Length: 225
Image (cartoon, rainbow, N blue to C red; front, side, top):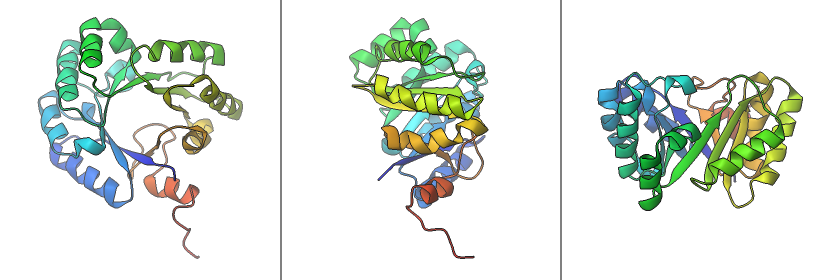
């Protein structure tokens, strides 16, 4: 049975905790805590307020579609502190790891479960280009998340072929946007360990809710009209 990870984002610790509780109540197996939506000084408190054993900690910078309001130096320090908490996974961008050898070395030496992520907010590169990116990502972890923006159904179908290039990895590959909605559903069927969903309001373009994903996977039968 496919697993579901609910993305939660809030501007306060109390709201983040409430969203996490609601996500699990709706049937999510895991949560992605978008801690970048919190003020920098509340990030650690937010991480402590949720079940880290079932959480992915994400602290996305603005140039990667995130909301983190502090400096990059502050973000790197917080990422290390979050990693030291040993959540289920800590999501760190490929570019961040490539630019911060000390952080990458620490994660490897301490055996921190790391989800290496890469996003393209403009389109979907060729599969050859994306396969090369996957090879770079596997240097840092076997858990990888590669997300593009689909401009056509063809982009989405082509993207699913990448799962064949991800042998030995725990790949999460899908596309944002209307044309990419199908990839969010298909990803878990192609081998992703879980599918991302929203609790109520989408955190990313084209994101479905937990209830919608559950219905599409046949976990919940649609109500009679």
